[in-house]
Length: 417
Image (spheres, rainbow, N blue to C red):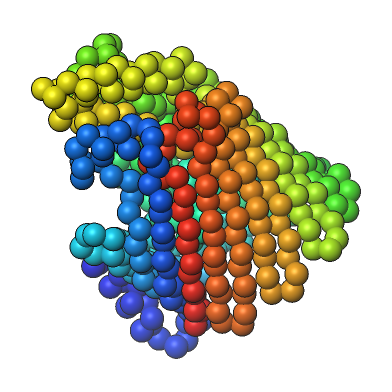
């Protein structure tokens, strides 16, 4: 599946010299160390039946990101970004994580530009969360930032001095597929974004029609309130959304995973935030958001009640293995973009010369869970060194304290050439 796109990218390197070209690459060696939690459904399942549902183990990753842009006559350009990656996890065999991040063609027609192919297209103004990132739907607050995998799309963009307009058909190849084959960012959808600038105010309008989730509309703004202060906000209302549900199951043992993704009802998402930048090279970011696609407080209470019922069943030898499997399934909704609907996020960064030191925290007020991260980065002419630590915690009943990982650490070295 990856051979043809990679071959096309490599072929573009050999195009005639009359076409302008721009190439680059990053080579990264990263080591990840994770400490498993001693509580929560995954930890309980592992204790009952070792090896059934372990947390993601520690490991090492070697990857090369190759970038190339070929500019041809008549305003045509080709762009590719390929990630070659091999990971070896502790106690297991290596696995290949190679992928094509981007492979697209663009035609420049003056005030209009046409694009087709696989492309990273991130929208919205937030940092920790983006309600109107309706095409890329990028995972935010990752411990190690890298180019995300783009989405197949067709796009028309128009530009003027103070405004832009973008019309996108995302995942056109999936339009006739069933809903279960196009959940989340894989859904075929029509989307639009309009931008204009009014004085010091940046205004963004968004619209989307998903193949099975229907219509949604959004608005975002950012305002530079002074030399040191920036404020931003974003909101979206949607007709339907893809979300996790257990269906009409009781608390007894199940033969199959009761957690399934389904098309659910409407709701809203919003974010409020601001950033202060002052000397010496210090910045503070604060954001609060609501994500109506996350599980409700009532669903999480039912989740905890089922965990306790399964733990009771696991005390009976006859049900031990089955209870372990059911407890492992309870970790299914951990893959959601937001675990709790209401969240608070704060980040502080200090940048003296070639160094960047940052500390951030994500808080869930509903159960007082938290994720705290610290990162240190040094950037030279060609080398970049990253180090980071992350802790998951809170009261024993909080969702973040029951994740399968208690702590994670990383150390990465990247060479650009």
